[in-house]
Amino acid sequence: MRFARFVHAGGVSFGVVEGDGDSGLTVAEIGSLPFEAVRFTGQRWALADVRLLAPIFSSKVIGVGRNYADHAAELGNEVPKEPLIFIKPSTSVIGPNDAIRLPPQSQQVEEEAELAVVIGATGARRVDRAGAASAIFGYTVGNDVTARDLQRKDPQWTRAKGFDSFCPIGPWIVTDLDVSDVEIRCEVGRNPEAMEVRQIGRTKDMIFDIPTLVSYISHVMTLLPGDIILTGTPAGVSEITAGDLVSVSVQGIGELRNPVVSLD
Image 1: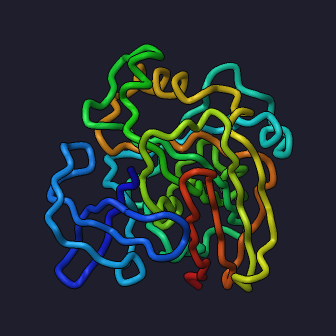
Image 2: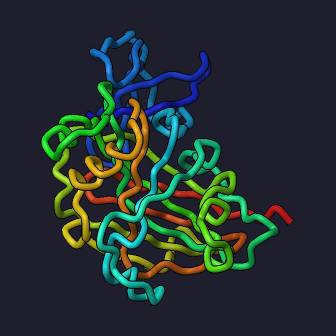
Image 3: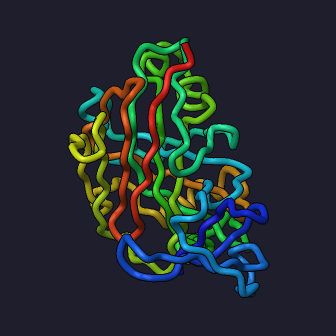
C-alpha cells in the first residue's frame, strides 16, 4: 500500500493512494495512523486536487554517512568499518514541492538522493537483524541536503545537515516493497522538461544493508514509530542553487520534487 499525508478542503489527513501510473490517482482518507488497522472514512479525492505533505511525523531522522563506496571515494573518504550515523532534526523535514531554502551561512549546498526507511508501530530497541526487519513499516524517498562547506569546516555534522528544509521526504510511504536492489536517481535542472541526471545508484551497492543499519542504530537509541532512517547516497552529489528543481526518485516508490530558493 501507499500511505500519504495530505491537505484537503477539510484539513489534514492520512490516506491510501489508489490507482496505477502517474495520472488518475486518487487518495482515500483513513481515520487512523498508517501503522494502525486501516479504517477508511469513505472520503476520497483526486490526488491532483490535494497537496501532499511529508508522509509521516518523525521524532528523529537518522542519517547514515558513506554507505556507498563510490560516494565515500568521491569525497576522498575511507569506507567506514561500521555504520557512520548522525541526526537530522525533525524541523529539517519538508514534503513534496516544498522549497529547499539555502542558508546564507553556506556557499555550497548539495543534494543527496537516498532510500528512506520508516519505522513501524512497535519501534525498535536493541533488536537483531530479524527484529530489525519486523520493525520496518515501509519506505519513502529522501534527500539528505547538506551544506558541504560547513561539513568540511565543522568537527561534527549537525549544522551542515540540520538546517530547516534540509530533509525533503515523500511523496508517500510504500509498504511490502523489496528494496534489496532498486535504483536511486537524482535529476536537477531549471526546466522540468530537461533535467540533468546527477546521481544513479542501486541499493544492492550499500556497504551496510538495511537490517544491519536498523539493528545497529537500535543498539544506540530507541527507534520510535514514524522515525526515519536515511540509508546513504550513491556517487554524483553536486551543488544546487536558487532556481533549481531537484528530483529524487526511488524505483518502486515514486518521485520527490523540491524547488530551491535563497534566503538572502
